[in-house]
Image 1: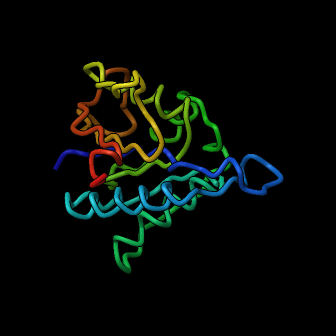
Image 2: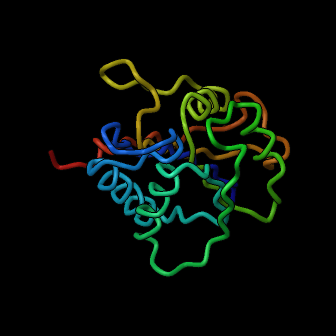
Image 3: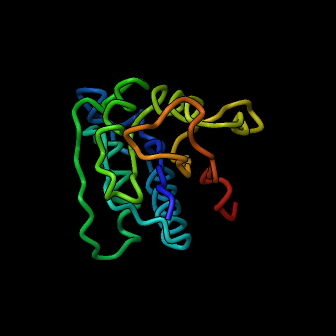
Length: 172
């Protein structure tokens, strides 16, 4: 089985909420619903990760939590990495490259612009944009199949299988 890299941007946050620091910004109602939709889709596609690397920001942790609710009571190794908070592509790549080869499906949960830049860096083909010209909006999930091990990940070294947006799953 080829390795999978799943990249999930945090869901829509609540800019009107009372918080003292950016990293404490919570999700809004649409964000919680979108995170659940993405989690349900991951289960339906049998894309349950073996390892999760997540930003410690509240909106990333909450996105992960709502998505994980769909997975049932699975015990998935999850690391909350300080360096993932607003990480750039190089930081993300360095961390991915250190993942053990025994991991078949790796899930990253974090923020733009780093995640969007990572999607562009890895993709063999230019990913599709939304009608408004955006690539990696909130609660987007990119699913890559890797040509090599995580340690050998390189530019344009992965095939983008899916770029899923919550709007693709909503009934509205």
